[in-house]
View 1: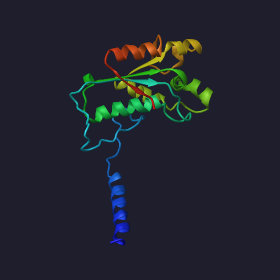
View 2: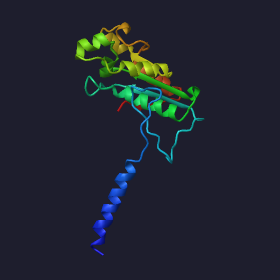
View 3: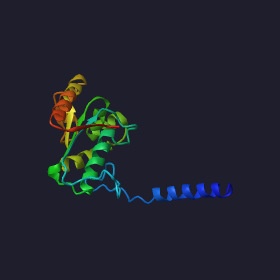
View 4: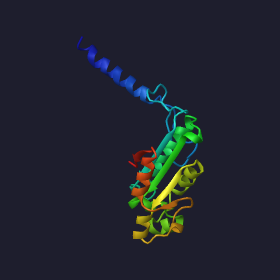
Length: 182
């Protein structure tokens, strides 16, 4: 019996590894330059196309390196891609991002980003795709004022707000769930 137990564990571990690789490929239909979504067949909490999804993502953190997406853009693109894959109609998809603090550097137009980091801004395509998918993007006016930045320095489509805290409060009061960018 003792000789059988190690063999049984090898079979169990192999079958666990094999099943982990059987997931479908990630899909990025709405935001190809963002984070893809892996549809999980049989998930107990599945996406319901009839359910309204209202979320605001608190974008505070910078990317881990200048060539990577901002964490908030990764999170938002995952949500948008997930809802798109699940065929949630646009009327039931309300995704908002508010950027403040270190994340704001990732919103710079390409020339300014290249001058600061020495590489092209990897966020610009995903930002445009998020906006095209109906996502609202705001930047904190307090951060902009404190750092003497004009809205014209940022990617097109990003709107100036009075303060990140005010945007977060207003959207939460309207029933939006808040997700951190990490």
